[in-house]
Each structure stands twice: as structure tokens, then as C-alpha cells.
Image (cartoon, rainbow over all chains, first blue to last red; front, side):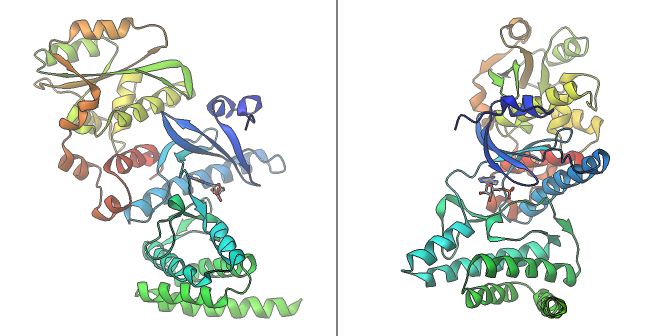
Length: 238
Length: 172
Ligand SMILES: Nc1ncnc2c1ncn2[C@@H]1O[C@H](COP(=O)(O)O)[C@@H](O)[C@H]1O
């Protein structure tokens, strides 16, 4: 864990000096450290050399802004997302609450499936995911990149009433259109079924819970069906 | 007092006073630059962490040349507010002349406690531990000002609601 950030060459280096690199993504690096005494995760959207500098700056700034905005919008609606502590819009760093001890929904599903002892226990989690996504869409927040890696289980909680926390809102935006919500669910479906084989009925359970939780859901599911059909037609074009 | 991790050359010291008798004179001294401390109405603070977040952001914006107000101290007070209205921020979060309690936040070089000593000498009042700030907190007033919803309180504390708004107010 001696991978300290002090050797960084760009302008965020001073801010990250006390943090340790934890995860490296294509879009951002995730660090763990302290913010004013509290356990914090720092998400640094670093400059992309392959992009035109001004365009890169604009895109990166937008993602940082979207992430911060969506966090507040979700929390106001009672949807758990990490608390944002501090945002540096000049180096594109977000300092947020570290959900210490949490695991991704992805890891939880994989482990449960591998152990094979109680796959039905995932049903309660699917229900909870459906409910939270319905609530998020009722606030007209479109996540933009729904996957089981972008949902955390706080302190390893699971089952009904699981403490689900949504993360990674960098591609989020607001829209009331059922089409946008349908695409959001389609992205999740694709990611879900490819990451977790043989979970068609589990995902259907998620959709049922989503539908039961919101009056606006039927219009979204109708769009989801249309998007699926389009996807299938396109795949046949080859 | 604690060091700012992100700006290790600075420390933030917080002091809480009650039974204050010279609020008006203190405010005048602060405006004339004789004391180097942000004078905050403790009723608007949930926790000392809230003031630290405001101070950290003020130091950051000063270094980046992006402060919205004219001094680091006024920037700390401005950062506490959920809105971008500067005069409102001062009215709500700054100490008023008749106040009997004050929370003082000062940012100083790590080793240099002279500003702290000056403040301790100037305030005519009784110092209490900053950990007692919650006994001064106007919870209903804060909920109203920051527009904290009941559903939000289900997924987090009042302090978290407040800190989140302070952190993202520039872009909402
Ligand atoms: N606030 C957080 N607390 C704990 N883990 C996090 C947090 N944010 C991100 N992570 C982890 O970092 C990974 C990448 O984050 P992200 O780039 O936001 O998708 C996630 O899949 C989580 O495992």
C-alpha cells in the first residue's frame, strides 16, 4: 500500500499527497485517505492526453459537476449516495465519504452464485435495487452507467432492506423522458446479464419491483422493450 | 486545532465562547483586521466539522485565486451558506452585534499561535469546549435554511446534509 500519490506530475498532486492510489480506471483514479479526519475516497478525473486539451477540460469538468449535482439531488430524495465533502473544479477531484467495509453488488452476487448455497437470498437485493432505481427515476435522475459495480452494499448488508448506495454519477443527467429511463435500465440489463450468467429471472424480479414502486414505471418498461427490440435488430445487421 | 491535510502548512483553530459581552467591538476589530478570526453565529453550526469544511474550501479557493469575497475570513463565512448570496450569508452565519455567543475560526501557519492568543485576549466571555457546539445549534433553523427534507434525514445525518450542500453549492 505504499503507492503514495506524491510522485504525481500533474496539478492535483499536492491535494493527493496524503492519499494512496486504490483503483485505476480509464476515466478516473480512486484514492483512499483522510479528509479533515474522516475516511475519504478521492476520485480524480485525470487529463486524457489523447483528447484535445480544451475539449478534455470541458468534458472532465462536466463529469465532475454532474457527479456532484446528482449526489445532492439523490440525497434530497432519500437515495443513499456517498456524502460529497469537497470538490476541486480546477483539478477535477471529488472528495467523498469512504464507505468503509462496503462491497459492490457485483462482488456480492458473484460470491453468492459461486458458493451456490443460497441463490434465493439475492431476491431481496433485486427487490431493493428495483425500488431504489424507481425512486431515482422518479426524481428524473438518469444514472448513465448503471452496473452492479456502481452499487455498493454498506457494511456488507444484504437481503430485504439492504443498505444500497449508488455511486459513479459522472455520466448522469436529468430527464423526465421514459425513453431516457428505459435506456438507463437497458444499460443495466446488458451489464447485469453479461456479468452474472443465468440471472434472467433475478433481473426480471428487479424489473417487477421497479414497476411496482413507481406509477411512471410502465411507460419506462414499454420503452425498455422497444430499446431491446432495436438492439436485437441491430445485432442481426451484423 | 487541527492541520488541514490538503494544505499542511496551515492549521485551523476553533474557539467557542458564551456569555460574550463585547460582540459589537469584536466585530469591529475583525472588520478592521485587528483580529484574524471568522466570527460565526454558533446557532448555525451543527458540528465543528462544518466549520472545518468551510475553512478548507476557503484556503483552496484563495490559493486558486477564486474566492467570491474579499478575504479568507469572509470566505469562510460565505462557504457555510447554502446559497451564493453574500450579504445573506453574513446575516445568517456571521455574528451580530447583540450576540451573546460566538464561534471563532482562525486559519494560521502551523506553528504560529499568535492570532489565537489575540482572540483569546480580546473576547470578553467564557470559553467552552468546541465539542459543546450542539448545545447552541438551532436545528429547526438550519433545516429550514438549508432546505433539508425529511426523506434526506432517513439516509444521513443533518451534518451530512449540510456539508453536501456546502460542497456542491457552486454548481447547483
Ligand atoms: N465512496 C466510496 N466508498 C467506497 N468505495 C468506493 C467509493 N467510491 C468508489 N468506490 C469503489 O471504487 C470503485 C470505482 O468507483 P467509480 O469510479 O466511482 O465507479 C467502485 O466500484 C467501488 O468499489
